[in-house]
Length: 287
Ligand SMILES: [Zn+2]
Image 1 (spheres, rainbow, N blue to C red):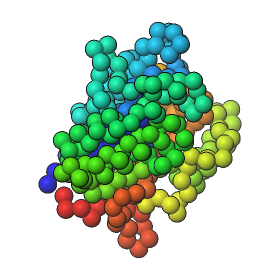
Image 2 (cartoon, helix red, strand yellow):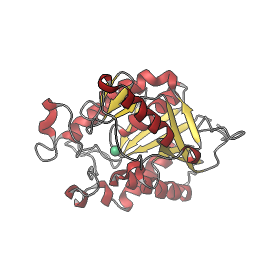
Image 3 (cartoon, rainbow, N blue to C red):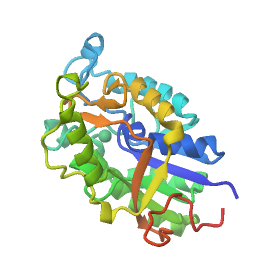
Image 4 (cartoon, rainbow, N blue to C red):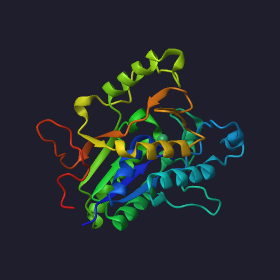
């Protein structure tokens, strides 16, 4: 049976940042890889001065533009099945809008993804029943770093996986992508030690969004696809700057570009042997 992987991400760029190497690896190995983006990231900050007019408080055309960045990123990763949850309007807008960071006034909009209800669950159930993935990847219940759309992606995904089981397709494993605390601390120290030569500044937060090593179940080695991941990140040029082995978002804090990506298994049984992390999202499944 073909291995089928479905990833549910909140905004264009999340898929490349968190799971780019994993997507490229499974696609290259012949698995069917489907990306669902829940919004087009309309509220993102814009790194490119020539695209600044697209901001939500100006032309409000960033989402439409980011759909093009997403297409280029997926071409770099070799992923051909890309869907926007709920489909697109005639103007190329997504059914649900980027809610913006927690606390922004955009959180309250009726069309904000954070306020989506059963319609969003139903739309994802339809995709799950059509694609029939054995493995689904999204975020943990904190939405990683707490963005309302990431939290909502987690909720919608788990609700849809449950509903799909009743509707005829049972997903075997659900993972949350994870950034590992100890790895992030090492990367920050490495960047700080570079001093003036550092491509981006070292962050000073407490990594509240990271997951301690002991809580991670799975590490996918996608080092062979690191160049594709870098190209995918670079394609999201309104959002991401890439410099050598590092990248940064609009806050300018550097993060290491890594081919290994980590996950926590939230549904299903991770196949860990002698305490080693599971290395394949499909491990233990008859595929
Ligand atoms: Zn996001």
